[in-house]
Length: 496
Image 1 (cartoon, rainbow, N blue to C red):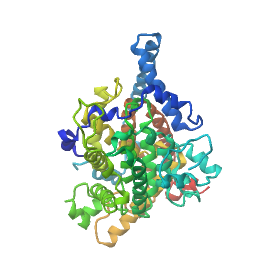
Image 2 (cartoon, helix red, strand yellow):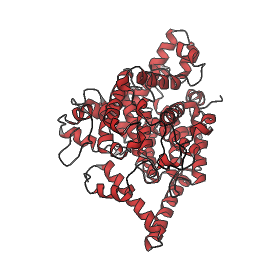
Image 3 (cartoon, rainbow, N blue to C red):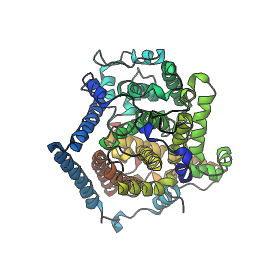
Image 4 (cartoon, one colour):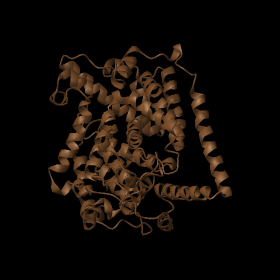
């Protein structure tokens, strides 16, 4: 990933952006009384507000300070216990990976080798938002949307709802911004003209809709995957140790997740490089798809004024007159590009190093959260990567659905490679892959997902719940391996 650019002076986000909301903690607390208590993402936001209050009491030296210290210590011990329990397991001979799986892990993952009821108050805004919120949602969709803000949200089920009409990204994006408080807390100072707030919201939603239309109908890399990653990013932003995040950066995280795979054609970087495709030639074989996703997203924004929300951002933003003003257009574009480029699978090891550095620095747990610009960018890069590979950490039906879809996409690539006379990429051979599904899943979990989420749990303790679910998914695949299950047998549960 672009380490050099993340260190540059131009990429620095000043502390005023971290504290961009013009609301006081007291005014936010007053708002919490009006929140719909049944909505889980809003309840998490309330918890963050309460945590902030607890920190204030801690500084006063009251008894709550000792309580907070004990709570933090317990969380750290829980995380360390989970990590220590997982250490020393290694990979025994009976769990050794097939050569094809090893080659795939080395080549692909390293560089070397709505309206829910009167109790909810929609944001004041554009005709686009009002039209989306006025759709008469059925009870099933209401229940699905109430899971927004948690890892349990099922975007596939949302997509199937007739009211959504296939626009799962747009519906979930508008719902999250409307009822998750992101729009409400975004200060007008972020815009070049405070009177453009309604235009900004309208352009942003139209941009997201245009992005959704640019996703191709692929088995895995489609609009549902983008929506799924965006919802995971949203849940990460609501965790207790992310309470420092500004509404602007929260919005940035959602937008970047939405665009991170736009235009994906169902084959990986390895294929493009081998085939010397136009996109590989354009980007010199380096993070081919990731560069294309970024370029396409900003091209879609620039080609139509009605989707160009970025042009409305303040180019001289400073909440504090003593701070050097920041060009938010440059800041948001640069940060989004860094995050998307970091989703290149070959950047995994570098991201793990960045994550370990964040854990050692302990800055995210400190009062005020991350203030260093590079640490902040590294954190967002890691979180998007974690959201991108989160499938196995989800409840089993969701995890299995995405595992099946990615295999179908891999094998379609292998078929295409064979038809072109190219060497078939690891894990893309349909014939051998049909008989070795469990081994591939076990390898990916053991070498990529589990180490990532165990470390991430030391940064964000709530992530340890995902580690527990990951153990269940891994146990499922171990059993399927023992049963010598083929492709159809491995995913039979999805057809029941």
